Image (cartoon, rainbow over all chains, first blue to last red; front, side, top):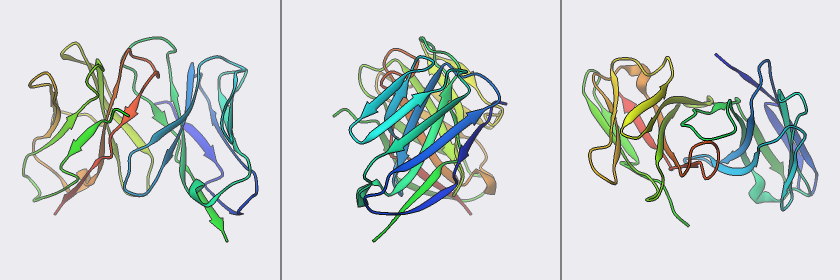
Length: 114
Length: 114
């Protein structure tokens, strides 16, 4: 099946630093999503990307949908303690309607050191 | 903000027993999904459901799994004869119009098979 390669696996940063993580795929996804998961909770949608080349921001978060539709990155600027968690990229094969399952990456574990 | 509600939050069952995991999707959503996450691993798609039938399923969703929408509000996942390797977090999700728009996850049910 389709797989997403997400990197880095974990990040140890200082509060206030910027963060960058990315996902690549060998196959095309027509929608890219970025989720954050806190311990014991379900994934919470951060940003959804629908068009190749699209750059979208949500507060301190910025994500881009790669031109080839095979990659995406997520940046977090000026990290704060509540940014700690696991960040997942997810791809959806279609951009329109339909009950598509999401393919998830393995996650990036963000740890902020005091 | 509307939520996807899952019950119970934690279920312990003996190997070979049947379990039913319950979900109440967001009320105006039409597409429903189940995912699982084995401890420390990525979220994996199991099945999607629309218009009272399965729309898509993964290779994980074998004959021991079934889904049902018994009434206008609940969406259930049944595991017929649980195995040790079924131990995982199970997440329900729903979306309003299909595709990625409004794709919302519940907080999950932790299933432990002993």
